[in-house]
Length: 271
Image: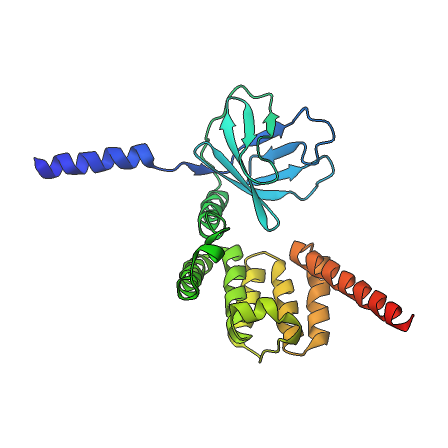
């Protein structure tokens, strides 16, 4: 009897605290604030949201209970659902309120299996790589930090093996750092980094491409550039740009800005 009661309590607890993860939110959410940069948010019910009137590509999002998390480049916008409103609770959208014509929210389960899995992947991605990670660099000593980084790498490697492209990109970054002398060396001495050809890095970049993410060509650009194969690096970058890779677009912009900065420095020296 005690065992049955224990199992019943566990079942009820799991039911009460189970997380409803989906990505079926749809419709436009607008703010009345004039000249607001992020307005409107238009959700397609299939895991993507456009931000602003001229955004045609959009960003991925996931819902968990009463929260909506939007992955915008290297950060996240987080909202709480309330009646027919989304209330911002993270950087960039904090305290901003967006209203919709819908009367209330309903966490409808995603009927498409791939989209449902994507929502779950993104929820795990948020927990692993965004939630509470903003301060751990400053809160931990070097040994604890290295341990935290290794744990994060292992967790992302698991998701990568399960087929989540964003985690494969993160694992690539960790492996690249290992090859280039360590995490801090990569951050502080990027101009002098040289690495040897590495099959594991090649496989990770290719896996990202095989999973349908053209950012893998940006990873190939980084890999070939620092192994000294500039021709293959440029070819990879162009391929990613042709396929609409946001990461390749960011790389291309940074390259152009760097070249502009170097040219200006040379002109100043000549003068």
